[in-house]
Length: 264
Length: 312
Ligand SMILES: Cc1cc2nc3c(=O)[nH]c(=O)nc-3n(C[C@H](O)[C@H](O)[C@H](O)COP(=O)(O)OP(=O)(O)OC[C@H]3O[C@@H](n4cnc5c(N)ncnc54)[C@H](O)[C@@H]3O)c2cc1C
Ligand SMILES: Cc1cc2nc3c(=O)[nH]c(=O)nc-3n(C[C@H](O)[C@H](O)[C@H](O)COP(=O)(O)O)c2cc1C
Ligand code: FES
Image (cartoon, each protein chain N blue to C red):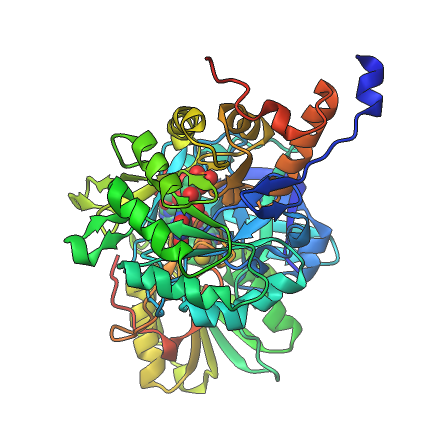
């Protein structure tokens, strides 16, 4: 069941340029959430900005009753969000949407994240490890600082292979290039991917060529977040007659369902 | 006065032109889906009424995205009336609301008088519908695409056509995109309207300066939220003295103080739309807030303050 909750903020800090980590107590939410789902976060108690902002669950720890969000400041809403003080409350709705499908048996899994697309993959990685899967992650960002989340994966025992545009960490270039050259690609059972659409398009193509099952997570501007306003509509394939709603039918879709044609 | 406060019996029920509501707070069409979408957040059966997503005679897939964009204290939407059609609504979505024992108001949209009439006739045969809200902010294809709601004559015709097919209360939803709202309201009343719903969204747009093009794929969209509240209030204030049918007021209502302003401008009941997105529990909170106000002011029935702000 989803709920409207005001969670007490336990920590809130900048972890990289423009990137913040927000940790709050929300026991019921943490218990019910699954990886790939998101929250609708109120960024200010006033009516401007008006709408909630969709933010993925970076982590949801049922035992501690704690939820963590990792967000990048891009506009007015996220910049107001940075002002929420520790011990104050954060107003969230969720968990929302259809998250990632976990394997029934342990599998060899590759996570591929670009930029803020790394955010929903940590909780997923933790659940996959818990289920006994072998998990590795390829993570790309502009530079080493923005790959802050890498450490969090390493702490879970998930090996993190970095790629940066400026070469300040790992291989220089794009994460899809690293994936294309990945030596163990033919042993991979599953790929889960989140990031800019051009990157997800490239990753989907590689997965298809190697016949690897894959899921990806899409974004669309949202108002309600619960499937009521029909605002977050999107065509999954160019010729489709009906629109899916990213908030309810997604945000996670199987790579075979989606033909990415909207480039950023 | 103190003792009056104690003894007062608050009656929140409203008769909106034959539509019986438990309390004066409805949720607005297109902002609450078919009710079920919000069941985790509040008790659907405690709402004054659920006005369901606009339906058309045949299914519609809606406009291409982007369909929504946030604006200052508001948002624009161009959903394009995506819906499964009136039959699927009645068969697949209505039973849930009937089971919840909540007042259900259907919302219909058409491109011709025949469309409206056919939907009214169909809904007449569905049990569990308390009334029909007519979305008249739609183009009349037979009149060169002119919106029904912008022409008093067409408004009267469409209300008449619907009334001829149904015994259910009929409530046209007035478009604010007109010069003389009073003329439109009077025409609706002459056509036989049982109540008026005011207001629908204001036409607007937003431009992406990087791409140098409109943000919405449909170019124009309907503005809703707190940004439109003063316009809605003004129109209700003008219409209230000019008609003898009750008004369901809405447009930017976020809390009970907003709702009370609408009631004092002449609304007998109110609707919450965009507010549901911001706080999915606000409809229930608004009803509670109105009740608190009545207790504090010693008001037994809301009727005592409907139109109370009108300066004669
Ligand atoms: C399912 C989902 C999960 C997300 N998870 C994360 C996350 O974990 N971390 C993170 O940093 N960001 C995430 N985002 C993106 C985040 O929602 C936007 O960056 C944020 O809404 C921007 O708000 P703003 O007011 O700062 O920007 P503005 O550009 O001022 O916002 C204006 C409007 O556009 C919307 N908007 C702008 N960018 C986006 C976007 N990319 N996606 C959806 N709506 C947008 C806003 O919600 C708002 O309604 C996610 C988006 C979705 C759809
Ligand atoms: C996303 C969205 C969809 C809407 N869909 C409909 C609709 O299908 N039919 C209708 O009559 N009004 C529709 N409306 C208008 C609302 O019912 C309401 O009249 C309007 O938004 C003003 O009220 P508000 O400011 O409280 O939202 C829609 C509004 C929004 C924001
Ligand atoms: S955001 Fe309202 S339907 Fe998805």
